[in-house]
Length: 253
Image 1: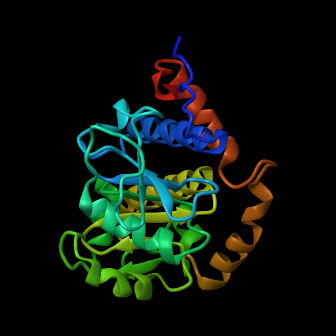
Image 2 (image 1 turned 30 degrees about the vertical axis):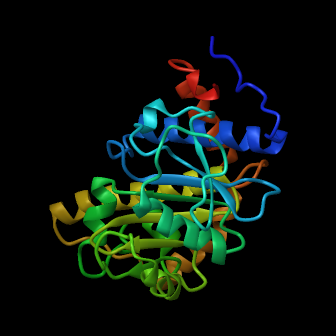
């Protein structure tokens, strides 16, 4: 039985809860096959601490991450709590930018899934050819690939590509999702990943059936009827955490 994250004098209850939720999310992503060895990132703001967020330790697989191993860092790159681990600059640059400039980006996920990278690497990107894709028509930004994201000067172009949206396909690169809560980010990533997987399979079979714009509009209008109380993604995320818990509860530590 995993023990709870040990209290620390300088850690608030809100930070402790955020750490455990984020660690659980990393384990869920690993379970779903969305990890990329030691790369890619999911981050959350530390509640009540301006400019501080939690990020994965560079060198640790998603399936190994625990609440206490997460690195606390600020948007200037200062590590705010003792750690033996480094932070991947390619993740810091992108996530710090959005946490700084997008007030409602409490949580952010960036992955290199095969399906996400494949769809981001073709002209036209995601197409309205399946149920899940119709969720996102008109709601995705696209950002041209400029190489590994380690240069601060790319920041203004990232923000311009995002505009007023909260999801992007980074061309030739992968998926970027942000949201007001971590469960919201999880469910958006899950649905976008499914949309990409199904598009790849559909395109391999022949000419797809394209959903007309008016039907897409009806679909998006009515999606809220499928939600249950608790907030976007909360029930689905909780179900996946229970699934992960059946084999390993060490993420709480």
